[in-house]
Image 1 (tube, one colour):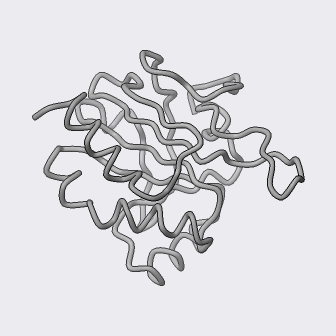
Image 2 (cartoon, one colour):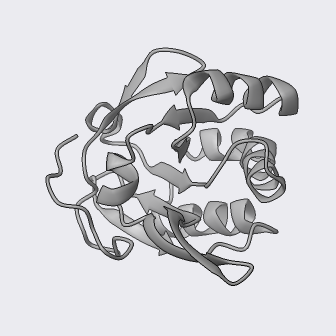
Length: 165
C-alpha cells in the first residue's frame, strides 16, 4: 500500500488512485500499478453473500464481456478473507476478481471505510462505493452510496464515455 493516511471521504475525480497490492480470488495478487494503461473499476462492498453485495457482484459478472471489450479490469474489494471470497464466487458463479483487504487499509485509503447507519445503529464499515480509474491512474468517476439495481450498467456507460475505445 502506498498510502499513509486514510481519506475521510471517498476520493473524487482527478485524485490519484492510491496504489495497492492485494491477494485475489481466483488466485495470486493484484497490484494496481500493473494495470496502468487500462481503465479499472473498483467496487467496494460490505460483505460476501449478503443480498445487496450478491446482486452487485452478479451485475458486474453479467456485464463482464462488455467491460472486457472496453479494456477494463473489474475488481471487487471487501474485508472478507480469500476463503470467503472463493465460496462467494463459487456459490453465485461470479466471474469478477475479488480482492481481500482484511486490514481495511485500501478501503480507508479510498475513503470507502467510515461511519454508517443501519436500522438506527451507528457503526464503522465499508460504504458501498465504486471508482472508475482511468488509464492514467487517476480517479475518473466516483459513485457514493451506490444503489445496486442498474449500477453495473451505469458504470459501463460512464466507462464508455470517459474512456472511449
